[in-house]
Image 1 (cartoon, rainbow, N blue to C red):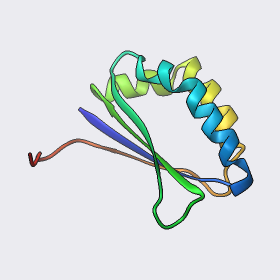
Image 2 (image 1 turned 180 degrees about the horizontal axis):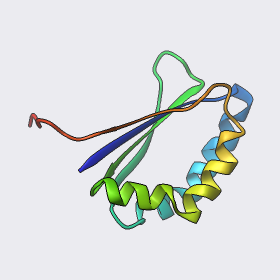
Image 3 (image 1 turned 90 degrees about the vertical axis):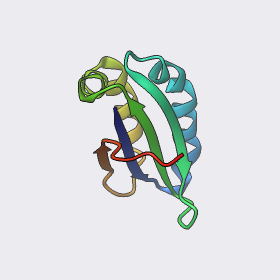
Length: 98
């Protein structure tokens, strides 16, 4: 299992546009083979920063998505809205606390 977190810093005037892009594509991403979960998080301190939090079956599933036309389309529309460079982390669960 792979947990992917992407931090995106937006120009505040572009947040509504980003939310529209996310709303239009979230169902397709969530149904992409190997995607178990996808959500968007708002930074509690900086209102212009958003994070995507997704869970993937494995690294191959994540890479298949990242090499897909769906990702290319969504990312092309999203990255022009940034006010800073996006950051991304891929992690594997080490220990789960229930």
